Image 1: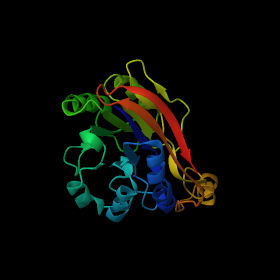
Image 2: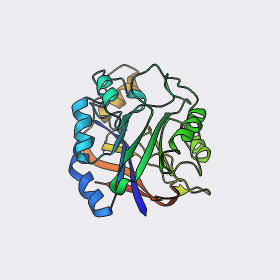
Image 3: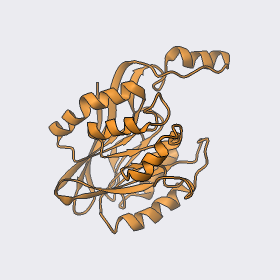
Image 4: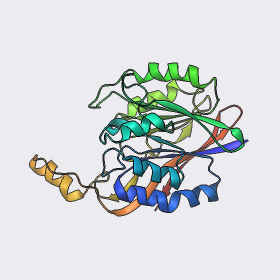
Length: 261
């Protein structure tokens, strides 16, 4: 059985949530998408996510939500994460933190998909545990439940994300990067059967600077003075990548970038 898994890049603010509601379910039906893994760390006004917004994204067709370094920007999400296994924070955060860093969900026909969420350390403000060691340890646990393993590697440095792709080649079905909000053109199948892309891009307004109002960002760059980075509004797109995966072996056979306007 061939599965199609869609990785959705960082959903930014109300415009990002709106295009997910408007386009995702129809796209999945037309393309035969089995699972959707979406990064939601910027969903609430550009930072964090509220429980009601997470509910909306699940209702719109997302299977699993990953949260990135802004996971705790809205503290209301903490009790929600404790009771909802389909929303995950970086697995290499301290174990004392709420929530979980990996999950296993079941799709049509009883097919199971595991998702692990990792944060890179290079250029990131919050230093997390070693993502490579965390990935190896989690793999040993998740592969006991399913050969289909998806990794959202949330990081600033392309080198660190590419390294994670190679580290998980032959172990993960699909490794995609998030956080930089710019879709990369390096999608490929690695030698041992892992679909890989350095960054899925951003799901939100492209008439701005990585989702924020251009005038606000320019003010900060030109004057060096603080200013609120309000979410932009124009040219809204849903961006990501689709991996075609064999359900028995967990190996990927194809990967394609996606941009829905």
